[in-house]
Length: 314
Image (cartoon, rainbow, N blue to C red; front, top):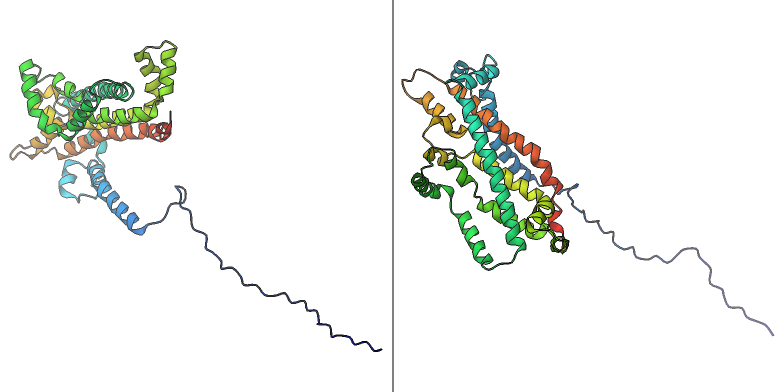
């Protein structure tokens, strides 16, 4: 009996080809460290930077010129002689050193006005955010309405009121309006609602702390970023205030820098005056903005360090 053998299929080492999955491109994740590049936004930002820096460069360059170089040279070009120090000396000695008096007046108005207005805004904003009382919403509408009213519209009524009180042509006519800061009050109100936990306040009350002590020792340190912001806004607003001192003050001895430098500008522009002092006006304007730059640079770190304070949840 013969046996038949069936053919055996040959064994091959080739594996069956499998279709490859398409390679997916990994989506780029943009962060603060790796921001998305935008040519158009960079161009717009550069143009805005030029718009802000060119007047500043013009001011710095012309403050280094003498009166003769200022008249004869190009605006963005330096003069034949570097006269910055001579101009500064003339600014502080012109008209018996009246610039120093204007500088002290401005410091008085700014320091007193900014500190008082910031403290009142912090105190009022905390009270409105953490204390429930009748009329809170009505008061909110009043604050928002006062923000929308420009300060120039209130200058004439304030002048008539202060004239009846007999305090015009005194520092109080400039200081009292600067104590009220509706925008600062609203900002502190919003920030206090998020930055100050209700649990801390309740714990302090259980421990027997009074409301003023709770504000000064617990709430006020937590409000540091918003406090610095309001302080800077008040600082800049009072430092650059022009119209209110113009109508309130008649005695040059109480002028702030804004009014005083403008008086110098008018004096140098008067036909037939015989005394050209444009270099003093420009140098005085440069000296006037130095404290503003110093204030922003010195207080900038408080903004960056307190960005997370508003993220506390009850």
